[in-house]
Image 1 (tube, rainbow, N blue to C red):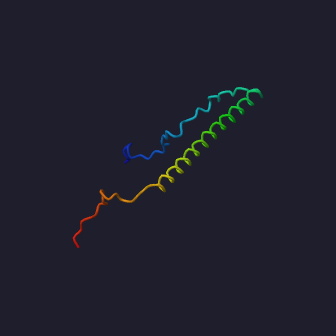
Image 2 (cartoon, rainbow, N blue to C red):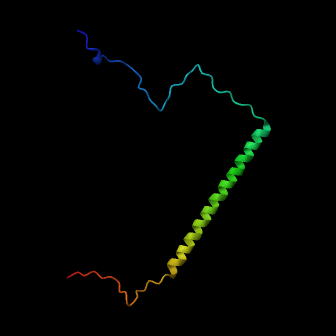
Length: 95
């Protein structure tokens, strides 16, 4: 007696959305031929962008260093002695 269709074993590939199917017959988009001048301009643009990014990073580092220096000075000059009219809180525990 043959098993019902739901119990037959079938080998199938699971559909994985991370790996879309590729149409082998489709041609890849043709790359535009670039001139030497365009390549050079792209390199210069990338170098300028990298210089701007580096300057922004250095400015941020400088600001953080200045803030840390200010915090250190404020901590070292803080007066932590209690005021006589404002005593420090004490826990009331019966021993």
